[in-house]
Image 1 (tube, helix red, strand yellow):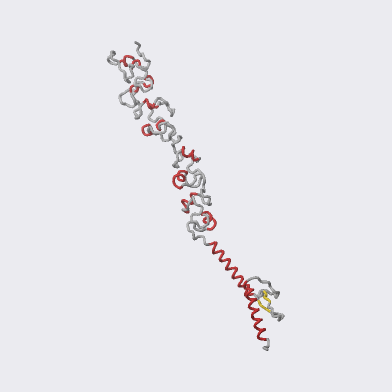
Image 2 (spheres, one colour):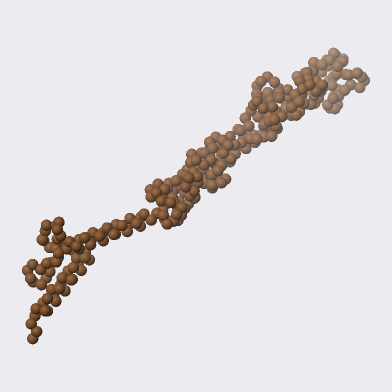
Length: 303
């Protein structure tokens, strides 16, 4: 028998132990260690593991289930080197090189990419991750059509997750109800309903009230400005008619009993008959006719 029958770097003398008639089989695989390339059965060659003891537990690596003492077995960690630091995982306390030890990273899968976190170089690139921190996973954002790298895809001031999970607004439409106010303005500023273009039901859109009328989009009695303006306009017209009536002059220059209404007045400077169609002029004409008729009856001899 050669000095190192299995070529693992350990002499047969050392691997046969104190009783060559009963040689050890550390991993109980039916193959004695002196002939076994994987003495501890972890899938990593004994020749690679060697006799070092980095975790100081008194057990050489080739017989140690957890050579670096990080809580994960050598068989689980394997001899890969994802962070390319020259130290295989089973001996590397920070296998993914993210400045956090393997025992802290844990073997969960935060981003759902099938790679345990302690070996994952990027815990935010899988479908279950939320790289933009908006409350929606990458998989959800892909389905919605939003940007998994942008927390506010439509730039309306509300995060994608807030719109989907809380306000019910459209994360790809800055103004969901198309009333002229962005969703964020409605939710955080005016407290109007971002899903209702006329929150107070007064017939004026929220955006119209805020941007054009300056009225309260939460008060159905406001705006009253439109009605006030119409009333004021009507009052002005009435006042104008009254003024025109005051300027009217009723005359009967030719004594034919038919009065003529003229649009006179101190500022007129005219004597030409003015055709009038207003109610004030008509009333003045009727009164004048009544006066003329009365005078004629009084001047006519009886019998």
